[in-house]
Length: 310
Image (cartoon, rainbow, N blue to C red; front, top):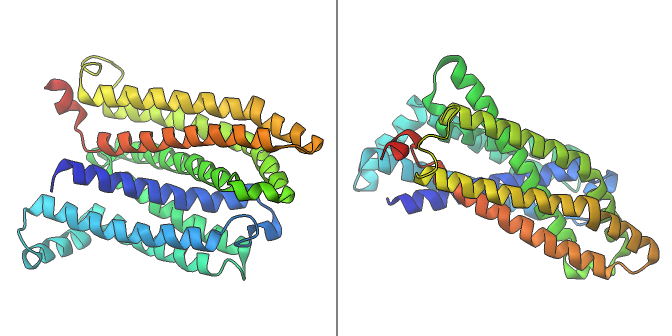
């Protein structure tokens, strides 16, 4: 399998699991009571079932590709024993099994959303969080040992969860900003309240991403820029940082200008202009997040030390 296939699979899995976790968590901190019922504000059941199921499919394909890359097996009969060995004798296999059970739990919980809206979201978020955290074992932290390994994994997991929270929120806001939603004023009121409520959550998310990003860089590269700037790894990393900076700028625009504008427009009774401005901002911010995930998927396939030495 080519490296490009591996990058695409990693990108798809990262995106899917972050959406699953982020959407479930969004329903918990932004919506209240019956607003959490699927269809009242967001179609949680279909969204979470689809992302959980897709996560399972992508995980299966990813395991097959990984086993094939490591074994060089030419056919399925030759590949099967290698898959069995990986599942039972490696940490990657163990975390893969945990991910599959966690995704099954999230999927099952999502199907019960209309009966137990709050409980189902809590359970789905827990399962999705475990599944997302398991991706840390596919990263650079798996190469460390001892105490360093523990802290690297901790930073990776927090980084993944924070990123998932942000991307899920962007997806949720995008769904709320669909054109047909403009006809329902109470949903615009929910949107305005959710945007205001996301201010503190968003600040926490950015803080965690920055802190864990610095920690991860120190673990992977060290306290130096020597050899980084001219390497493929360094170029991709700086592109990621530039996109992240753009997301922070757009988030600040939403926080300090567009969100207050929507609240004022809602009181005045004409919120179309504010909603359209928010929609454009969210599209740009979500597009930047997708580009970042593609870069993350690519970065995860590179060995920084070897790349910088080349």
